[in-house]
Image (cartoon, rainbow over all chains, first blue to last red; front, side, top):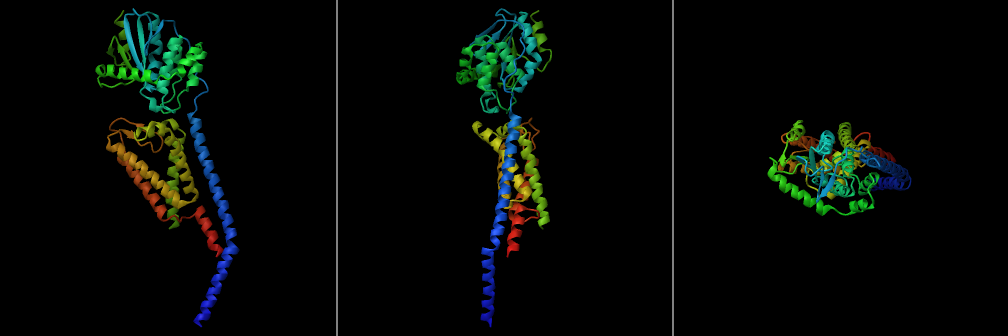
Length: 257
Length: 154
């Protein structure tokens, strides 16, 4: 009796098992496959949209817009620095800048034109010291060094002022894509620099720029109250000035009048 | 019970989708945020900053539709643990950063860090992910839909 019951149950179980293997699963399996594929397609779509969003927000214009020409003044490259203005100008202003530093961009926006006017008028000479302290903050890393090196090349090629102004006017965002070497070369070409400039930009300036940055760090550590290399740092006749004080430039120039 | 699970799942999905989207639309800020933890080599930061929002969006999507819930929950929990380790090490080393969990991020002024709040929020999210990893059966899910097929097949 128990045996018959057991046999019956077993028969039923086998039937279910056979049914499950032969009839049902293909149906269920098909739905599983369809659902799996649908989920994969959805995932691919989401990943695609995510990457596209990033790419779109990261894009810089295809070329660097050329800044307007300023007044005329002499430009000389001095090692890893660039001097604009006459050597006998009564006031010397040193500017330490990183081409990626947002505060430097603001500084240039506020005082760039005034500095150039003062230089053209013979009131001051400005020594630009391009340094690289934000190399990690661009994608790919190293825009600060690349731009600093290119600025030195631009000084040799005789296009420094507009090259410098263009890079600050179209400054890449911190953390964002930096202008590429090819784009910097093109900017030089747009400004009338020759092939030597492009070749110069392609040269690796890492050693030169890092040496200049280190030298600036050493030098400014004694002058700045915090003892650090911050950008922009501005010196008037060798003393650090507070550029947060809007009257700093008038004061600097007034002392010479 | 599966209804409550659904709430937890959609809540976690919403958080992941939001944080992923906010990071994806501002890759520059995301790089600054990842860099600010001061853990990864500079060359790797870009890769992580690109992958992180995509991973968040993918996990959020899986949880939203309810596919591979247990795995998505475990992966989310792992991600949360990694982020929490990042925040704790920043706190411990005295860095002043924002976690950049929902976009933003990067260095902040000293004294305006919010490490305890950020960690509490992560603990809450970790609990949600843990819940789902233990009880992945929730209503309105692809997983459940497929399970239904197999059950009705017998």
